[in-house]
Structure formats: C-alpha cells, structure tokens
Image (cartoon, rainbow, N blue to C red; front, side, top):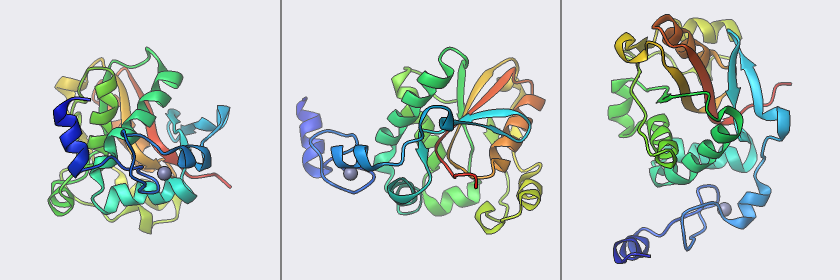
Length: 216
Ligand SMILES: [Zn+2]
C-alpha cells in the first residue's frame, strides 16, 4: 500500500457499500457477499422492449436495494468503485468482446445540479477503469421528466421517456455500445435510450445495470 493510499484510508476508510462496515480494502464485506440477492445463471439476463438485451448481477431487493438507494440518494458516491467492479465482472461474463464503447443513462442538468453527481456516470467510469478506458457521453437529457418511479403502468412509463434522450450522432455511428444504469424495472428508460442510440447509428446496444426487479 502506498503512503498516499494509507493516508486516504485513514481519513476515508473504505466501507462496504451494502452494510457500511469499515474494511481494510475497498470491496464488499464477506457477510454481504454471502447475503446479497445475486441473480443466478439465465436469471441474470432479460430482453427489454425492442428486443434489447440487459444483464444485472443483483435482484433489486433487501440488502441490494438498501445499498443502491444509499448510493443513489444519500451521496455515498465513494461506493461507485466497488459497484463498478460488480458491473465490470457481469459485463465481462455476459458480453465479452461484444462492445467497443461504454456510455450511461444521464440525468438532466437540473437534477445534476441538485444531486451534485450523476450516479450512472460514476458507475460507468468505475466499470471502465477495469478496461483502461473511459465512458463516452453519447446521450443527453436536456430536460426533466416526472420520475419513472411514480408511474406503474408500462405504457405510461414508455410515454414518459419518449423523446427525452438525445444521442450524439457523430460519436455514436457504428459503435457497439454498452449502456449502463443503476436499476432496471420495466426497462422503458433503457429501451428508449437504446432506440435513440440505434436511430443515431449505433450498430449494437447492450444494457447493464446493478440490479433488476423480479417479474411476477
Ligand atoms: Zn457489508
């Protein structure tokens, strides 16, 4: 361990993003690693509206839900590295060699100002560190829409995100894109982003999220 890392750990000790336990090195504590609701085998992958593939290492429930909500809404952005590792592992297993560009589902400038960080961007950056690359800002969300979480009907969720995202055609053309977000529920947001990326020339769009909700 370098002196710089040692000093950093002294003042900002690495914590398990799911239970908050202080650790010697960044990661997930053994207790949480065992208790987390991991998706198994084929459960990991689903097909979103528009035939878009999406993989997620966790179910959005219990400990996983608590950790992600803490990360998303309470400014625990230090957890991004550990969560990014989960994403990188999952992408390597599911999509190895199938993408050449990484991007994320952005929040609007207004939301960014309020929250101070774009959670999906930090996740994409953390996942990219493993591949010694950086995510590209292919999508923009110029204006806010009502939160998807307040809408339970699938058609209403699709309508709420329609036309909300804009892709940069110059950067998107011919790319095989890995699109990252924190959670997938109905998939309306990811499907709309994938549609916009493809309309802007992307050759392929593959989705990756930390967690997914169970379909009843
Ligand atoms: Zn833990």
